[in-house]
Length: 151
Image (tube, rainbow, N blue to C red; front, side, top):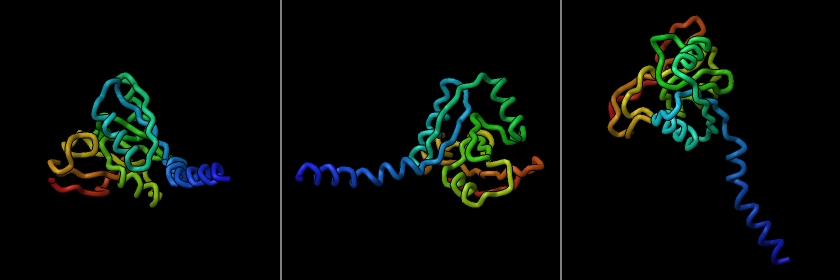
């Protein structure tokens, strides 16, 4: 009986971790091989309840993938992700992705063009440069979704 109680106590202790893993949101990241900032961004996603998987693509194929998925050329960054019907371009914070998924905006997705220093995966947040996250609308236009001030 003591072993059963110990096993049950252990299982109950693991339940929150198992539940969090089951609730993690899958996100497919397309990137070039060996990109350190892409891997850092994927770590940021993992730390914030996503389950990222990476697929390496050659530069030209990655650019074609971005364009085929509705990313305007002026919004391009180094990696592109797909999550629950949306495209995520660049170093978009996990909180903005979560907000998009909660709101279910009628849009293509989100983008942080370029590689702003201090955005997730691009250096410490406290030293960041100001940047905007853009909502990519289905007609290819964009609007500011959220703004991050200089840190």
